[in-house]
Length: 458
Image (tube, rainbow, N blue to C red; front, side, top):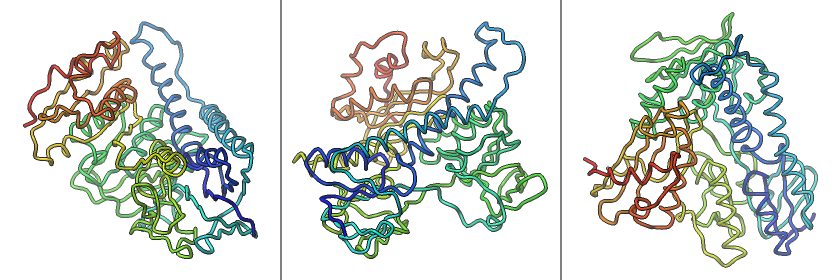
């Protein structure tokens, strides 16, 4: 039995920086990883998928070369083995960097293996038992596997197993029309595959506003992606050429067939095999560890950070969890989850950058609000780049003039959204942005112009 000042379970985006801060504060730290250093982001999420997005973008631009006055002779061929090798190299470098960082920390011991609570202060890793008065859980999450009849007899893919694909599916069927599913849909369509998205809701990415969902659907359909909406998956089956999905739908054929099946219907936390009951930890009905605004669990001395706490499913929320815990624990700086503003992106091309409330949420406030909207066809930078799809939308409180939310679906939207987000964090009125002088030609320069176009939201 070995005692530590702190034990960290998992090396996702919160665990490693927290280990570094605790070591810096003079603590003797143990960090446990059962598989790959870096968590979802480094291994099966942000870094590898955005590397694939970049390859798909290059293929798309090459095919459109004629629009820019360029001549490319011959077909544009995608070498999937080379694409995967590039993705693996970039992801691998990040994974090894995290491991080197942890192993290089003074007074930090790395344990490889599966962690299980024996009590609220004891954790088993293999045949070793570690003890501490401070335990931080950063166990992450994984793809949810729905109980579709016939699924046990079918080979299917998730966001994780998609990382091993080194050949091109003839026809990729994706069950789930939200963020993960749509990114893979466009990637593989641009690689030359036939792609069908099956979504049970009446529109894609249902948490977004209808105009956002509609424009995203148009963008994907223009690229040849078949989208089946209001199509609830009933069962799956094998056939000679691959798989088939039977759907309950209002329109279209009741069966979707393809060569490969990707399940992208949500995520679940990696909490079911940690022995949380032995520690007396409370989880909700979905398996997420219940925490307060400072990431503290119901058991004193145990914190839960990242995807396993249900307070955010992004790399940036996980890292912010680390910042909150470190500030409260080490800096006497009270920070809470309530301080942060919802912000994220959908990395199709063009990307969707989001901050704050949706229009639907603003309407539900039942308070006077203002709205401005501008198509990307009226953004010079987008037109010059030949990427004028999408729009920008801003929502403002009519009383205090604070920005309530924004959606930027368009080239550079994932970067331009930060001008809005920073102003929201500053608690400043939109007039500050309205009077700002931005650089021309950029996407961001149209944000001040949009402030001149605000009208009552009716």
